[in-house]
View 1 (cartoon, one colour):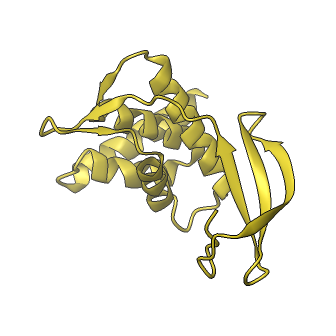
View 2 (spheres, helix red, strand yellow):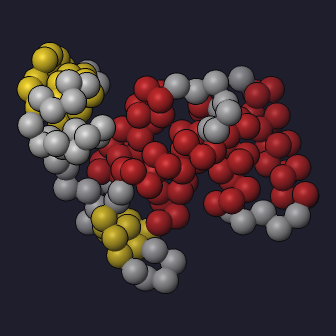
View 3 (tube, one colour):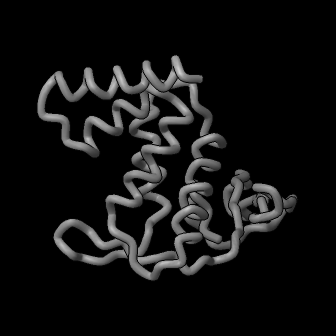
Length: 154
């Protein structure tokens, strides 16, 4: 494993334990070059579906892109990295459970919106404004009114 600090390839595993309810192994490593420690996660490589973009390009579902979208929406919000990690896990699982080899990109976007709706309403509106390409303030207001109605029904 390459050290994120000095890029050396030699390290030793200091500690290993299960993580994410047994779905991954967390390894604490120490670089033999600079002696700094870092954490890696090992998980089973899933066969993720191909995502069909609007222009019909196809690419493999990228966990990093999903996480980046969530992080951007949740910027300066009280949501931990572990919470976002769990959200990405649920999104991946939901998409895998569809059993499809190809999924339209909008399905991924809707899955992200569903997670954000449960996590943080401000992050949800942020993501929705970009994802649904809001054109004016009325679209913002409609989304906020919808959230308020959902809250009242709970």
